[in-house]
Length: 195
Image (tube, rainbow, N blue to C red; front, side, top):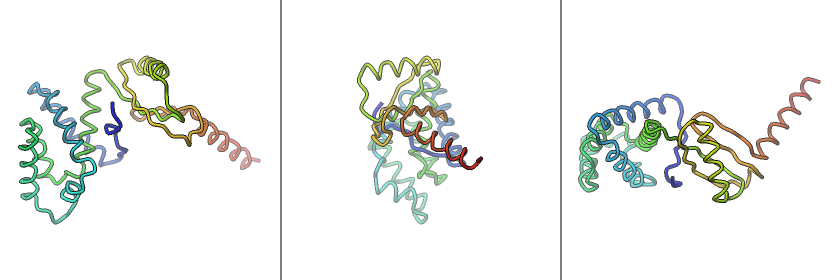
């Protein structure tokens, strides 16, 4: 999985809303036997809108009329040759004025699709680059822990000082030196306050 597919952090009502849209799309795509086609469309669409200033402006500007937005969406769908299900989904999102959440809906769809297939993705942040052997061992350990297939996305963050952090779903495993130091600092602070 590439860096561009790293899920973005989202919480609260917005996350729930994005997940509802994604689940509705997944159910429809499953019913029509088009899950792979819809996923391919969403991957291409996600790449196209990431960092697109025009799309961001169109999706967030309060005075951009929904009729104009729908026309633009129709043009995008036609030029990208999107599946009928994907096009209908985009139109519904545009009519409901939820295009600003589209990238989150795409992430939620990917997560639900992977879960449906018994796969999950873990975001691994390491202090230094991992060798192929380390990656293989980490995937094996996480797959065992999760009880299914696990893909990993690895990022480097030298501020961790050593070790790594693994995030999958709402779970976080912090085995970094920075995390251990922060834990010791909290313990010392608690002991000082108690004394």
